[in-house]
Length: 218
Image (cartoon, rainbow, N blue to C red; front, side, top):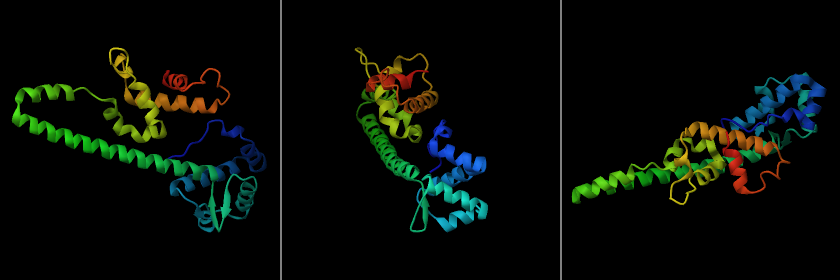
């Protein structure tokens, strides 16, 4: 796993504050380094091995024990893990498998389209021209394919929102004067994080449609 979710306000967490008061930035540094190691492996790591990799001596070992006592990390059968990170890793793997399936289906569809086009060119040149005009209409799902991993679990929400059609049959994204896919994705993810962090903001964004509208705004 190349990254893991880290809330920008995590320093306000009670357990993180406890760690800081007891061991300062040295304690925070040890904790987040442990998380990075666990995220990289995507599974629990043998405690003895992890301590050796992080060069944990007597002083840091006391800090390690304190981190376990306040339940920021856990140990079982000689292995160290973080409950939240382990849960995120499982969701990440599921999302990764779904995205890989989508990419495979997209490639299969592309191969079928190419074969059909070649077949049509032999039978009817005019029909081929018409077919090419239809195929030239860009699909948002095709544009999104290289960015599937960025969106993760939000892929379906993002695609559903931007492909909603108006009365004329035009999709929402086509009505935008400017539509930079990478910028739209980054904004969507940023606003999703802000929305999740603001747990009390249910009055403004109570419905799914309102939530997606909030995510879309610049």
